[in-house]
Image (tube, rainbow, N blue to C red; front, side):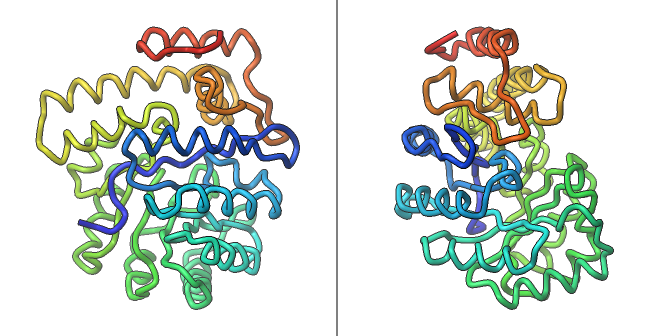
Length: 303
């Protein structure tokens, strides 16, 4: 079994205001997902609003998470940045805090060519104190880790796998085929409704945002896939697809994070404050989310 496998939630970053971490909410969130049986935590990813957080707050979050998790599961830390040196600096901080690995997507803003991307990752890996998981997120970074580039990067021992959030299962299948070159690689899917199909293609699990809210549901789905229990899987996957309705509330790209944070607020786990420039859901949207949770028999603490 690959080192990184199963359900690894991309943890939201609980906030109380500008540059202020919701420590109590973060503690409740961590214990909530761990109680659900998750196999690891991924912090400072897209769901964690990493690009919107100050470098100071990112380090505070890394310290708080690693301290509380205390090696119960692996902690993966996102280090994606437009500045090479900031990625390396955060990776060192993550190593000192006790993280298990770091996660790197393609630098955003100016799109990099594949030749540039290949040399960039090689240069990053040469300075990293931890194993590296690559992160394919073309919708937000404008650039893919093309399969040929991944194939070339498979020569680097420091790289341990890929999280793919493209939603393209043909690409995912080609990525899992690279295990022929690197059997130790973990290939994880981002879009949560695709978890069963992705694992059937040879994937190792999912980095699924919904596991912030319903960790046990996603863990049981993963376990049903591993056990080959098709009846149980169909039931659980139907519930996951039904849960996807929360992502239809709102109209901006940030609605995925807003919906997740809104759910957690309704469960009285953490505040739903968003990092600027984004806003949390207003009462009408909040009530729509609450109604969906009630229909799923999820106990809502507040409306």
